[in-house]
Length: 179
Image 1 (cartoon, rainbow, N blue to C red):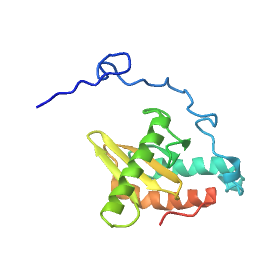
Image 2: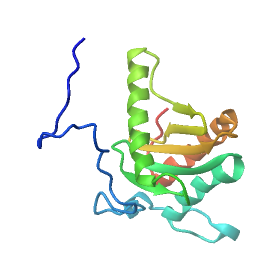
Image 3: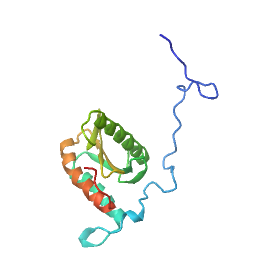
Image 4: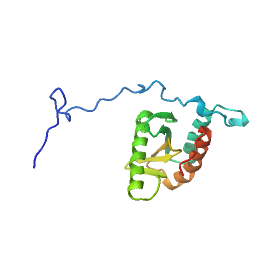
């Protein structure tokens, strides 16, 4: 058996140091981490007591629906299939930018599995870890909904609630659904 040692350009072992990380809150692009283009929100949705609210706050409220209706949901992220963070409702835990990137990666893997197995387009993909869940849904061909849950999450209940939420978000963004 041959063991190969990988080295970086300076001659150091690549596995001796951790990968570089951006500082918390650092932005990867000029759009900002909570920026959805206003053009995506042509028609505001109804707010509390019938008051109109902006499209972005309507989408944000839809993300909160999952937390309110499904015990164990820690928060949700809306991301592009390219991994760009569009919007989130996380208050603590992993970086929303990291979850957006993970959502895109998870979606890509699930999409490829569906194509290879000839089972059609991806509906959702759930990663069940020792201490929780990470589930990715397609809102449209370009937008993903990723939900982070703790270990007490009822995944079946989440699937029942997340489908209609994804459809309402697609309507608010004026994009067609994936199914």
